[in-house]
Image (cartoon, rainbow, N blue to C red):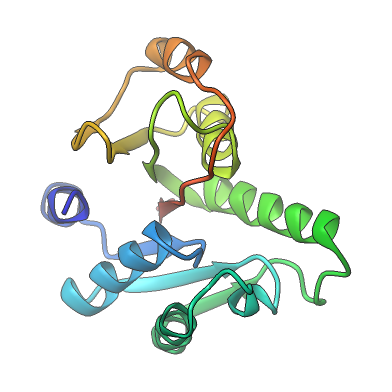
Amino acid sequence: QLIGHVLPKLVIDYGTDTVLTGMADGFDTDWGEVAKFLYRLRLHALIPHPEQYLDKRWSKTDRDRWAELHAAADVTTMVTKLPPAGQGEINGAMRRRNWALVAQGSVLVACWKQGTDIGGTFRTISRAVEKRRPVIWMDPAARTVKLPHWAAWGRILSTSSPNTTRSRTTVPAS
């Protein structure tokens, strides 16, 4: 539901015509589907490695959604060309994908629950803040959308503790 508040504003107020997605299960897939199929935006899929959709934690339905979204993408970038040889290489590929989202985006749109997550989304938000990219923060627990000032992010990020990663995505740089 929060996506429905953010995408129309990006399209109408800022002329967004393309979005990026990291193609992760969950928010990334939801973001990509809404952008591509509901708003008819161009979709750039940044895939960390060729076996992302084979993750054993994903259901068949989730793998099918991923395949449909991948097929519908206007641009696909495989960040790491070879299948990963272990968890370390998987983590590295996902980190490179996250950094590519920040590098190629003009704004980061992140779904993140404050205080519970120092995983990939936390690190991607931190990277975006370091690179002075605006971060539109959708907090699923508070059901809010915020655009915190740079100075506020230090305090916000310092309240986090280890837990589960949430997904992130961006709007490409103009």
